[in-house]
Image (cartoon, rainbow, N blue to C red; front, side):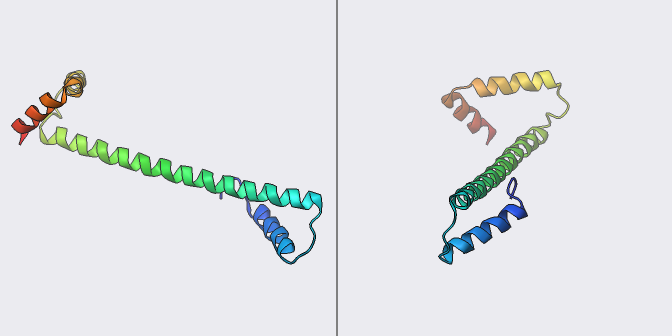
Length: 107
């Protein structure tokens, strides 16, 4: 896990084993144990956030490919970029009723 290396993991295992064995941990060791548990949780959270970011990016990429495929199918690949941006801006500004009417014509 990022930010939580093998040395920290080993130390956490040692302190946890001592605590479970019934050995009284010193105040410093108890504090270290709490800190290591917190670091482990923070590392797991960071890893989960990174996984979410990757999944979100994959969804966005899939949507971009889908939209690009639609534009390619409509033979818009020869159009200038400014014209495409203007057309997409017009489409984005349409009301739901206008979008539905346009969708009927596209079927």
